[in-house]
Length: 122
Image (cartoon, rainbow, N blue to C red; front, side):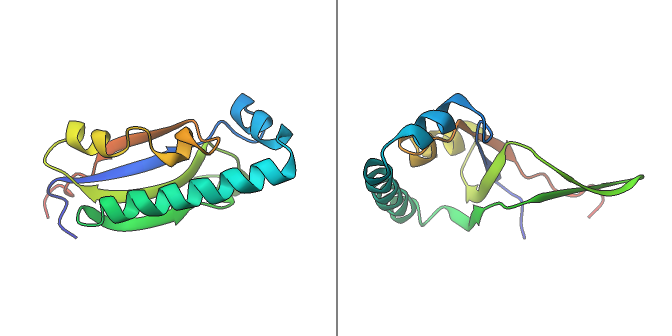
């Protein structure tokens, strides 16, 4: 994969005990289901609008296992999903995610954008 002008967008949540998730979970089931449908439709429209710059649609992330010198252990973090996009700059990539359904409709907290850098010496 060429990393030129490639950016990783990482979707962050506030955790299962975060304020936005707590408010989401307090919604009556019918209202929450309606917002889920609205959110998925908006996310689909976002994908369609930006399909020409999406390198990898990515997807939601599940249970996390951390592996380090001590071995493997289950952990919790705030990462909820990812997408790879191409853009002329980090600022342009960030603009793609302004008012994104992840936080505009769903209880997500933010989307962080970072460049994918080439591996040194390759």
